[in-house]
Amino acid sequence: MNIHEYQAKALLRQYGAPVSDGRVVTKAEEAKTAAGELEGPLWVVKAQIHAGGRGKGSFKEASAGEKGGVRLAKSVEEAADETAKMLGRTLVTHQTGPAGKQVNRIYIEDGSGIDRELYLALLVDRVTSRISFVVSTEGGMDIEEVAANTPEKILSFSVDPATGIQGFHGRRVAFALGLEGKQVKQCVALINTLYQIFVEKDAEMLEINPLIVTDEGDLKCLDCKMGFDGNAIYRHADIAALRDETEEDPKELAASKFDLNYIALDGEIGCMVNGAGLAMATMDIIKLYGAEPANFLDVGGGATKEKVTEAFKIITSDQNVKGILVNIFGGIMRCDVIAEGVIAAVKEVGLEVPLVVRLEGTNVEKGKEIINNSGLSVIAADDLSDAAEKIVKAVKG
Image 1 (cartoon, helix red, strand yellow):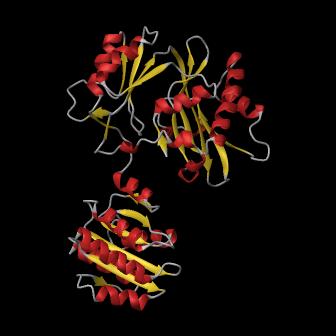
Image 2 (image 1 turned 90 degrees about the vertical axis):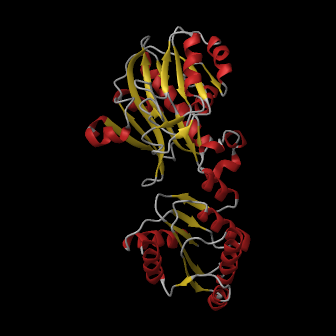
Image 3 (image 1 turned 60 degrees about the horizontal axis):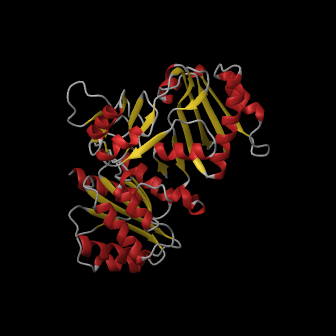
């Protein structure tokens, strides 16, 4: 689960990390009052969406020379004007894709004098199964670009969970970033704070980009992105309360409410599978036969008829889907339950695209009988290869 910049900074502030003062607004008429509560003389007006690259992004139907999603204002009135220009419009960045995201919140923040911009992030390293730090002197840039062009400017190291965070970790970061004097002490304190947040809140990613050295020589978190482990949110009511459902894919949101593992993709063949490994294999073989999967969808081993029905409805709600492949290997999951769910869903939402069903395992004959007697125009498949070949052929003609 991701949260907005202003929410992440509120969390940083709660733990004592250095951030600028700011106010969030959802209505243009609130902007002047919010900006007036800040000291100035420089205000930063930031569009709040769950995507990076806001400063370099552009609004749909933007006028010539219009700024991106992060703008500077030199007066309260100008800050309010820039807020009004961005609210309700669609911001497109390299992370949103061409569809962009609608700006429903604006964060107005005190400006900062910047001497240097640095990069600092924490994430879960799947290779070492540890929390890792990634730091670079090249702040304000996409870290992927830095890694591709100047990898020597990136320091990455993990923290041994047996010892936890130690002072030398902070000093290692400080020296890598070329900090000196009081900045080293500030860096050690910040590293300890960020690690504490990461562990206590079950975070998956915490990125400060840029971490700046101000013109007064102090460290400050100028921007922040945070993501949390969705499987641990039940432990953190305060984090769950920060969820912005308007930023999430409606299909993924609907799937989460029925405990379905669903991820939307860009292809044309919808997949309904039980088991993550089988789902990955199904997507792979679809690509092998020359098409692209429209989603990852694992209904799980104990899915009910109602859950299968909802899964089918989610797949068919995707307008990019030109065909559907149901691939079920019945172990704990029974093939007749899947068949009943598919029939119920088709009767409820209709079937306007080709549907290929491959069933194998527990109660497979009963499942096939239900499908065959349903009167639906369903293409039967004997195995996974046969199923993939048939759905790709049906979609591509």
